[in-house]
Image 1 (cartoon, rainbow, N blue to C red):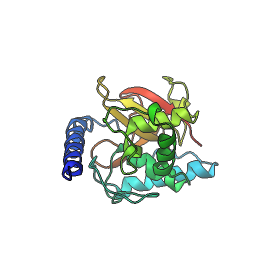
Image 2 (cartoon, helix red, strand yellow; image 1 turned 60 degrees about the horizontal axis):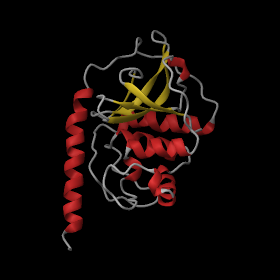
Image 3 (cartoon, rainbow, N blue to C red; image 1 turned 60 degrees about the vertical axis):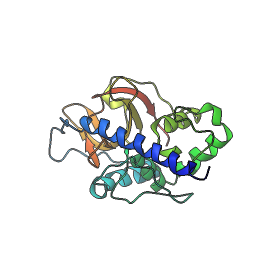
Length: 217
């Protein structure tokens, strides 16, 4: 019985490694902005400004990608800043804006566990990983009334908004945050996300099927 935690950790690691191998292929053919220095929209909301500042900084510091399971402190736990998954971009951005999604997701999930996805076979919350899973973030934002209609017009997606996607039509999830970097050619803001090669600001809003549009702040 004492070996069970190690077996569970091993299985989780295999799952995360497999997810990375499948995700890396989507880090190809990046849609670049039309100018070297895209216009930067002024942000008047303090939380949005701080969230975007963090996301922008991550494009300089988070150069790696991992979905590996980490034991991290609670609350305000984090991975090494030079790596992370797509969800870590959102978690770090929100934390800089005063919202600890690790704590918020855990507390809401603990009170409403049956409302959250059960696809990982867990029977209780796990503060190390729950907030680092796209379906859990989607559920949390929906439960908090932060969902917006999914539109095909680029400027409906404003700086600070969170967007989620289905990458392959089979449920491979991804998430990013809308920046304040404007692409005049496509008439939309760049997305800051990490899909396999570190955090980047890219024009990829409509590259995959959008499954969620959230405005928290």
